[in-house]
Length: 68
Image (cartoon, rainbow, N blue to C red; front, top):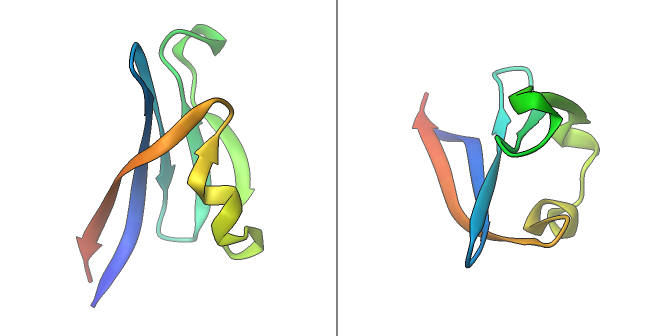
């Protein structure tokens, strides 16, 4: 089995990512904003698939999975 643990989003000039921890909590990172701090965005179980497809102006590019 596998678990989604990260999503990378991009535009042609920049990328951002979301990390999903073992509890399903979603964390957002954009090194160019928020002083490089990771921001908590809630739990993935409360998100729709559509909400995961975009992060502001960035489009989903890569899904990262970990083996359980």
